[in-house]
Image: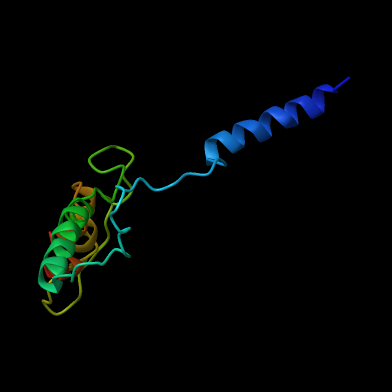
Length: 125
């Protein structure tokens, strides 16, 4: 009598043999014709490969540039819309944090930041 474990193992082995093609497969050739040699690869056009790569990168990077960085932008829970302003003496202009956090609290992305926004123009997309 065959146990259930060995029967299950035998069935699994038979299924694997069928799926993996344990039977001998012969290449279909026409009688009298020599079998084909090894396949050869064509030369890669480097210009087209680079063009395709930069085009693909452009489509991949463009949404990242405008991705909303502050999830609470334009809401009452946004902590970046609270700014601090310093008014120096002797008639100098005021300095505040709103210049840096303003684009983020308005719902902007990396391209809207004061310094990093200019650098995103170097990226494709």
